[in-house]
Length: 115
Length: 111
Image 1 (cartoon, rainbow over the protein chains, first blue to last red):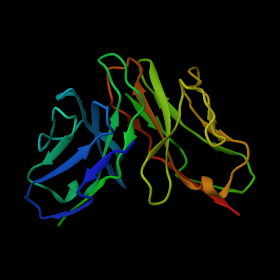
Image 2 (tube, one colour; image 1 turned 90 degrees about the horizontal axis):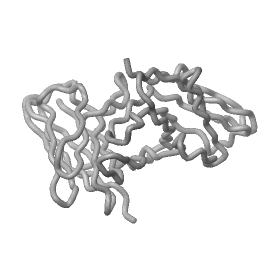
Image 3 (cartoon, each protein chain N blue to C red; image 1 turned 30 degrees about the horizontal axis):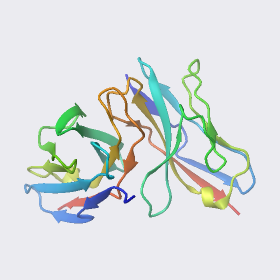
């Protein structure tokens, strides 16, 4: 089975711009979670999508948003980029029902640099 | 507060020595605990899940609810074990994908 894929792998943006990152889960996985990884804050949960609905949300400002499509692919969007948004953005997929969740498998990440 | 604490940023041992990577948690509900590993230039991958009670690559971890700990152990470290290790927690109800991660411990196994 192909693993979780993320595009693009690297991105450089300017402060104030917006960016969209994409994640394709493992085939058959319906849950996608997003995380931000920085040297200072470590790995922090952004949000989770399951069956095209946001199920859980972390403590990030409204500039961070996401969506999930009917094929389970997910995108996250960051608007009005700030220097502090520079990070590695990871997505993870899992088999999930409404009451059970398997382990999460991570993608390679998108390295976002904001200048 | 929901928190995962890995007290050591760096753990350095010699090949063949025992390894224990510490993880303590604070959680009001019934948690699921995981260990993830990230080898150099590779993606984050699951090492252990407490409900599986497996031994992977010689590593084991036991959930101690009394001490709220989930320490990772290996009796004899190998050089290929050198990596970053993250302890993570998830609500055990099964209705969330949110993982709470510790800050990670770098394990360095010297020859």
